[in-house]
Image (cartoon, rainbow over all chains, first blue to last red; front, side):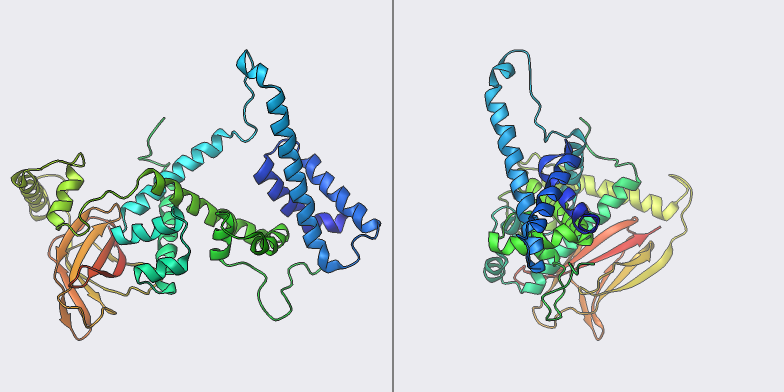
Length: 175
Length: 222
């Protein structure tokens, strides 16, 4: 069990935290390990190569089940929301919201510093969700040129982020 | 100890590329493609950190591009027009003389500052000329101290596509210079005969049809 925790503990925790938030996180991680351990002890996992896939499946099912419970609970408690009680979304996180706003500001500055054509390329990829092959063909780009554009934008994003963080994030809109 | 980070046995790295992680973060992979990535992420902290980095960038780009779609303006308006638009973003007709007058006032003030020095503050001692060679393929940004004139040499500029045009913009996208480069044996040379303040700049090389060929980033230091 300890070896399993050492290998999988952080990863399971990561996925559960990203999808479900911090509530009851330790219990959920433990539940996943109990399921995996029982499967090993029952002889359901004889092939070590299948272990990672099984762990992934257990985590996914845990996430799906938790979301299902939360949705059902909210549906059943809608009367409370209409009167005195407001149930906050368990995904609400003011710190995360602020972080998103800061990153959006940095992204805006990055986009202001690129050409119209480069902006169109990024728009095709991130907004219109076109595959890179289509973008390269229609915009007359090589794969390397496409990757270079994205990596430069990402580098500027990181650079501006560090600079603004070091300066106490000046210039960001308040409120 | 389980070998959970081992690759397929063919010598291939089990770690995922940034491109793959980005597509995963954007949920643009099929279930079949996502499964091995998720299995790897469960056991690889380094890839989880990289996933967070690429996801932060990708989602920020997505949000801002959706919130601020590209305006339908003429793609290659002259630099004067773009300068006017940056000063008068509300749109509408801007009397050309108004922008010209404002620009002349700025040039005059800059000339007094850089030339006299003592009128507006402590005198600055700038070098006469600073030179910098730029390559579009270089990973790190070149830097050069501020000087009264900046000579840039674009070493990997193409030989055909003349007449070329170079536009210099600040890191916020504000145009600061526009002109034609001169060809010499080392590449394309441009001379910016006025001081630039400290910061990051991008020199954009366009061919005769207005197509962007290369972009060169560099930094002016104090």
